[in-house]
Image 1 (cartoon, one colour):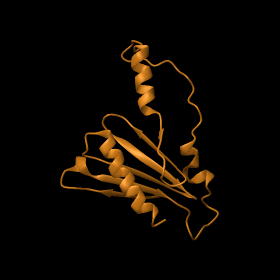
Image 2 (tube, helix red, strand yellow):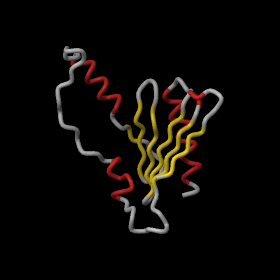
Image 3 (cartoon, helix red, strand yellow):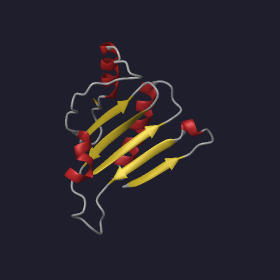
Image 4 (cartoon, helix red, strand yellow):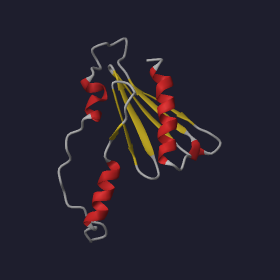
Length: 129
């Protein structure tokens, strides 16, 4: 796993990039299954009751939070890609062969713009994989 954090003068506008890839010196050490494909298809979470300050949150609020956290498929990147985010932050995950990328762009208010910038970075990075 390799990670880079590109810090700008305003840390909120920084970019985080992580790459999970096989070690060429140990080709069998990282397989597609262990490289993060399980992150692309995690097991279904066990339903549990959620409480905040002793009170159960409203069902609509819990449903909305759950919906925001669900991975959203992204077409046209790698073999498989998805976006996980909320109104404040998000990350793009891209699978290609035995490697995967995680890209997060800060400093952009609109989620669609954060996604767009993340996709552009992913396209450039995928050319080098």
